[in-house]
Image 1 (tube, rainbow, N blue to C red):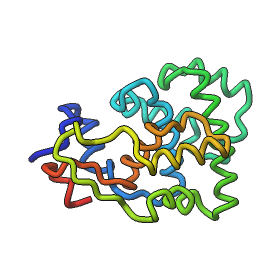
Image 2 (image 1 turned 135 degrees about the vertical axis):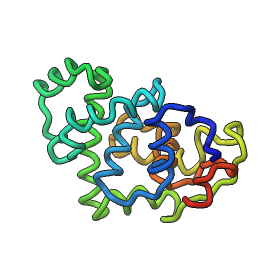
Image 3 (image 1 turned 30 degrees about the vertical axis):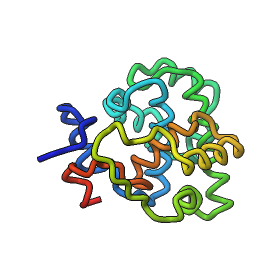
Length: 185
């Protein structure tokens, strides 16, 4: 069975690749989780974040934006002491800000899903890369998403992070053409 070469032999990465990565997500709570986790990944590897994912779920109220949006300085200090997550003040504060902005988008658009999928015309872009070398770090779509999210006050949403989000939630299919998931997604 051939998989995308970035997966390696880590069981958690294999499970993530085989069961989640690239499958279109339209559930707002799941989209929020990926938005936060992709921002937490900045400067790190996805494997580090994936290893801490369950800790993130516990620490951040199972990614409930309503609860996170109300976090206080006391909550931030508590999170900074949690060894199960990335203890970066800017990333933790960004999570709170992003929860607030996420809720604003839900009010404006009805759902975050409706807002975020507009950047790909509400359908998955199916790429045809045969090697990792062909996969871009950013695209015009991720540039537009990043620009709009930043304009709305989101943090840790550069174009590279936005493209990683697009890959994770199936806005683009970047499974390599030789990967067994390519045609299934």
